[in-house]
Length: 430
Length: 96
Image 1 (cartoon, each protein chain N blue to C red):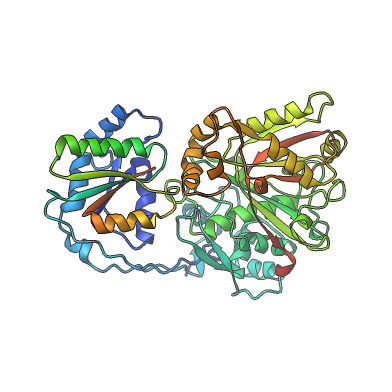
Image 2 (cartoon, rainbow over the protein chains, first blue to last red):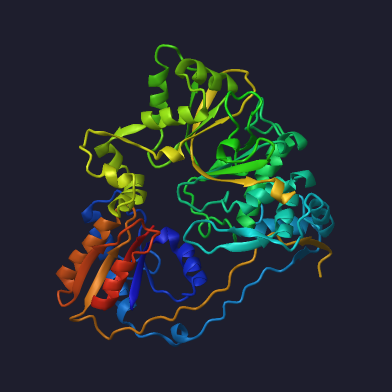
């Protein structure tokens, strides 16, 4: 059926690239100015009455033409979609090769280790898996094509990040998760990775003082490898094309990679609560990391109100993961009687509420939740008939999580708004 | 071959299958054109304004505003079937 597709001009490159990859290289687009959000009906009518900012031609003239203009010779022709990934990248000097990697958007613009054949071979010694074995697929967002990759391709990116071969099983597990650390969302989200089990000790990860900071080789390079492999193995993370984050996100340099402080936690480790054994090694992936709020300790008289204030500071579309220093984890046990992490998660879910009218009016809820509620998806469908002032849960219970990390220099703790993705076995990639 | 060589860090893209474009009409006169609200950031207001434009400028076209069901990334098979059965063309927006 003849179709015209309306886009805002800032996404011109992204939509053309996506249409090409979907087999529609000549799809007829019409562009209007960005933004549409927040504009009045009169302002949007002016967009419609005005010119396409990309072509300079009247918007509605282009819409009518898109539906009525006969297909051109070019549009009728069969297109060859030749593309492949050469095995090697070559240059006349090491400096020129570094420049080539940057020019191709293959780095994070910090210095990399060039992945020579010899270095990649050394990296591959960190796993018993075959270099040509397929690990998985990644994509920048659910509506874009997924690219496939092998063990060797993951090792190439691990070398670039400066990782050691002993870290490779963790990096392979991250790659196998299917959770990208380079999402293309306009919301500038980053990812977070937490390692559990004996592998933490074997590769010398940090779960104590400064665990989420630049103070440990394994934490630093595993996290960096997660970002580099995501952008390269999914087919890119190029601003305006495969990355649309309006502001960007500094968390993305290292993807908030740390190990859980299992030894000082009052609760079962995170991976055990997900069905693994304590002697299993795993990595858990979280996406959508943007917002954090923090607090010091839990005051005896009003800690409940303080926690609720933190929760109200998050947007209702991105659920909370509590990142607790062991001091505060133990305070939650003492003050609230939460002798399991699940009981604390229950409490947090119960406390995170908003008046229904405020909840449904949130732009993210309008975009991502309201249409699902209309389709009858629970629990949201049940909230559609709530009175405007009725308090309704901001999140689904299963999306609320608690982890423990930190070196007990104080009881500071934070809430990360993020989505738990998967916990993947590291042992499977040894 | 260059003097220095490294392995390419990119993954492997999937095959692309071309989707042929539909033939166009000579005119929209008397035809039904669905104006599909993609359900993203006030696109409902935009598409309703486009419906008003058709009323004002092309009353000979039966332009019908319709919001798709589900979030903007999800297909709406029921609506798409209706448009296929009852419509002649579609305008989809706003992607942004």
